[in-house]
Image (cartoon, rainbow, N blue to C red):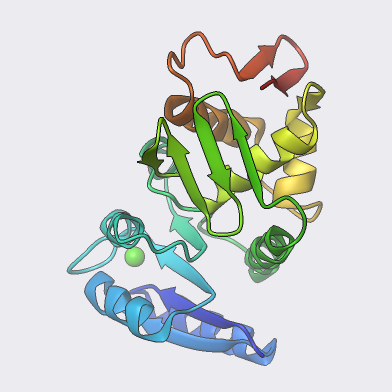
Length: 228
Ligand code: CA
């Protein structure tokens, strides 16, 4: 089954060239030129992945992402950003985007990210299905999480990072370990800062006191360690 990609982008030049490129790689491509239309297609077509520009007419990319996640939609999303402020916002707002690419980007870079996302989605299906520690329950199969029996919103990427932590329990993981295992070796511009920022978000969600974490510990100069 070919995978379905939805591209939401208002710059016709980018939209058309991305559509052509992805189609030539065998993907089924849907397109939308504004956020509202994009949201509609996302719900109707159920794509396997969404490439989402930030500055869009009618409804911007932040809103589209937020709305989808609020409705429990876990489709992987790669955001197209222009400025550093947008990158900070994507990472900081806990929008639930899986990754971002900064314009101008090469098609090769975007393709690498898309493949990494699909690889993660496929690996997701294997092995570890459920795990609980402290007051947290994780179901990696259904992508459901609970804290003290209340629903906890985690993004697909956060699930993947937690899974890696759990698989390597009590071992120190470097930021490079995350970049290699979660983002894939062919990533070009994911930085340590991205890893730190996602870990900060995970702590906010799972730790009782994120500034004094009990489960995800910082190991100075090395990385992070997960303990039960
Ligand atoms: Ca735009």
